[in-house]
Image (cartoon, rainbow, N blue to C red; front, side):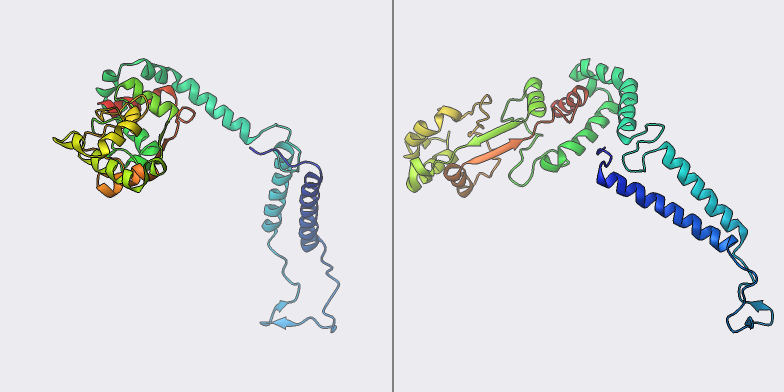
Length: 294
């Protein structure tokens, strides 16, 4: 919660609040107890409507007075006990911040043991518990589906498919946990400068058919060996330690057409997976890993 106002604004709030209450009290008292029964109409004769209805003949119902008076008393008591008068924190010292901390503390006390059990369980135990997998599905929908889709199959030629067997940074549970916990930052440099237009076209043509019979004879092979093999390997199988994808399969994150491959080689690609270490606890991360490896 933001700090209570201080200095000028604190005093201004106190003045406005007190003046408003005093003005309301004066207005109510003047309506009910400030009427002069001896004062008539300026013309000397009180006008009469509908035979017996005279001006100032009927005061507002008295229960209105008691209702407004009770609300004013309640307001004064509230302002004494709780924050409301500028920087005055109230006699009870209540604040939204302390209330929120208390709620977090109660939550931790109630669920710490359950979360510790989940974090210590094996993936197979978690995967065999339908209730926990339902929780894992909700965690995925809340934290991952915006990028990877509700079905986890990726989208927009930007976010990878999580349902296949192709994992750019490694497919083990340890690799997945590291990806979720600390995030990933993939950088494919732009090669239009060193390669030029012709070189980019040759490398793209080679990468598209890499591994096929006769592909080694293409002119882009030599350029690939010089500029690309350090990350993707001479055989194009990729390197999970660097996040360099396998170029021999049919999984192309940014598209497998010659135009898309050429764009990747010429302009490079930059992919960022945000870290969820501060957003999710150990039990929640463990449940997501179990969901992705079941």
